[in-house]
Length: 456
Image (cartoon, rainbow, N blue to C red; front, side):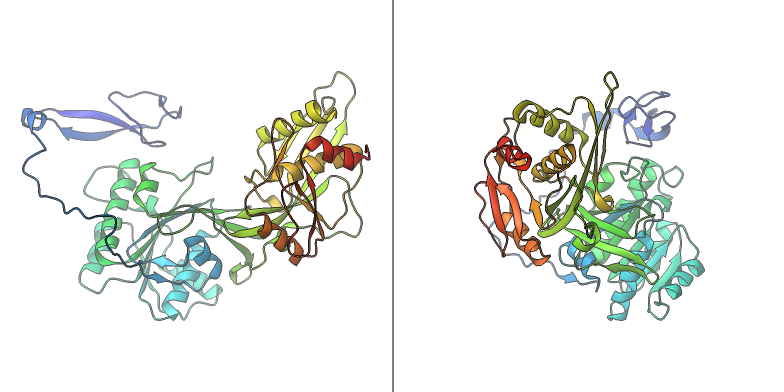
């Protein structure tokens, strides 16, 4: 009789070890190694050749004609934008976010709108009782929506429910960490249970043509809890971001096999649930009567949508000998250190004896390299205490040599700025005016600093 192998799986990252360890060697988490039953290894299994005994697979060429997958519009424009146009039949979507951010509220609104449009929709909650979900729907004004509601955690029970009837057009599982498969051992939420439960549900979605949405918990660092393979198994991964103390939420596509991965949907939490924001720039711009030094507007780009955000900088001089501090909110701290180094080495400015604070207004997070020039202008304005005119925007990438490089979709950024009343733009030299916005182009950051400080 072959002896089963022992293996220990990390519940944080899914790493597998042959013996128990207090700390995972891959993710350095403590007390996360849990024993799981391994496969039985026999001499036959070791010697078996997989090149025979299988079923041949049909091979087709890339030029074979194929129809585009049909989509279901949820009726929530911002949600459909993040999905790439709507839910694809037979697809699996994973949405993650912090507790209380509004994942269940958004999916309940989408499910209700699809049900009111005539689609068959099922909502299975593993965290709340059916009455709790029903009370939330009534509070949102969706109590009359014909959504099939259930509270269950057994994957076998859920699949058996839909085996003897027509499959729903949309199935929402809230959440995947609460699901349990009796095919394997382990408590709900473990790596093996999350992987097995998701695999069975995704298989059902692919075979029946049901659009499946899985809600995923997140860890303290913001990543989706459970095995990393879960994100590879699904077709679309959405991240619901934002602060519970703020009114707005951002739905960002991290992975999408049926659309772009840079689209975002912007929502505001109101009394009747989540409401889409058609003009998100109004959320991230500060309207003031007087000009303030250290403030600069940057036309960021999320997918095909330009969003104007305000970059705020503060420079505080310190006494000699004190260690200056660098604090960044909403931007990369390493990028800020690079911009400060370029300003000192190429432009003759000194930040070594000053504390630097940089903030993106409204809690927005920027990863666009085009923000370099706007950050540099804000820092120079804060250092010199010379405010930049309120009708000016800036964008461009700054190289270590001090060169100002162009960024993608400059005309789109300028047109959006023109719609919101901005008339001037500080840009790289190769960018021309667009949308009624006149441009001041610069080849180097030193020339721009000379202009801002009046050192002509």
